[in-house]
Image (cartoon, rainbow, N blue to C red; front, side):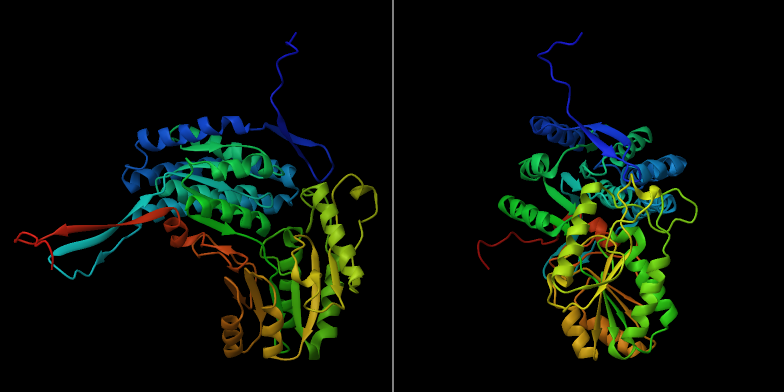
Length: 480
C-alpha cells in the first residue's frame, strides 16, 4: 500500500481523435527538474566527445538512427496515427521523411564547407563553425516525428546537445525517437525529451540561463512570446510560425490540375498544416466555374478513420481543436460568409466518437475580414475573386503572414512576376505543398525568422567563428 504522502507522478494522456480512446501516456516533466535536465545536457555536450568527433563519425551515428527509424516504420506510423489522427498512409510518409532527414544531415555535416576569406594583410583568414551548446527544440502536434527530425537531426549534426519538447497534444513520438537514437549509438544526455504544457514548462525552458538557442515551430502568438524571452537573453532563435497562404488560379491555368492542387493543399492533413492553401484566389472570369469544381470535389472527399480503406481525410488532431475550428467557421458566418459545403460536424455512427470535421468551403467575404486574415489550421477554404495581377498581389499580400503561396498559370513570365511579388518564403508555381529536406523553408513577416532544411538548416544550429593566422615577420607597432 502506497503512502498517502507520496504523489503519483503527473502524466500527459494522449487521446486518439479517431474514437476518443486512450492512445498512450507519458510522464509530465516538472519545472523543478529543468536545472538537472539542462545540466545533464551540458555535461553530455562537454564530456561525451560528440562535438569534437570528426564529422564523418557523427554522420555514422545519424545514419544508424535513420536505419533504426526505418526498421520500425510501421509501428511508428501506427503510433503517430493514434496520437494525432493522421491517415496511416500519411503517417508512413512522415516516418520516411524523418529517415531521409537524418540521412541528409549525415551527409551534410561531413561535406559542409566553410570559407578561406580574402586577406588584407600578412595573414591567412578563414571561418569555422561551432555549435551553440544546448539547443531547445519545440515541436507542434500536426506532424510530430517529421518536425522532431527536422530540428534534432541538424542540431545533432552540428555538434549540439538537444532538449526536445513535443506538443502535449502529440507526446508519443518524441520518446520513440529518443529510444531509437540511444539504441543506435547516440551518447547519453545528448538528446533528452521533456513533456509538458507550454505555459507550465515551455517558457521556463526558454528562459533558462543554460539554454543557448531555441528552435520553435507553432503558433504565431507563442512565437512572439518566445522571441521576447530570447531577446531578453540575447539568444538566437528560429521561429517557424503560422500562415494564411494564398493559392492562385489564373484564367489560363490547367484547371483540372489547379483544382486538384487546391483541394490537396487545404484538405490534405485535414488542413492542419502551416502551409495549407487556406485562401484560394480565382480570376474573376472563371471564378464561378472553378469554385463550383472545387466545391464538387470537396463534397466527395472520403472522410473516415485514419486506417480505413481509401481514406482521404481523417479526424482533426484533438477534440478541443475541432471546437476551435467550429468557432472559426461560426465567426465566418457572422461576418457574412456563405458556407458552400461542410460547416457542421458530419452525422453518422462512423463519426460519433471522433473529432471529425468535413471539408468546408466559404465565399462571400472580403479580403480584410477576420476569416481571411487569421489562421484556422483546419479544413476550411475561403474563396475570393481577383480582377488582375495588381488586384491579386494587393489582396494576397494583405495579411500579417508570409509563409507560402501557390500560382497556377501556363504563362511562365506571369508566374515569375507574381511569384517575385508575393511575400512568401516558399512559392510553388504549377505545383503545391512541395517541401523537401534539401531546400530551405521558412516565412516572411509574422510567419517566422530563420530557415530550416537544406544547408541553411544545418548552419542554423552553428555559430560562425573567424580565425586568423599571422604571417608577418616584423613586430607589431603600437599604432598604425
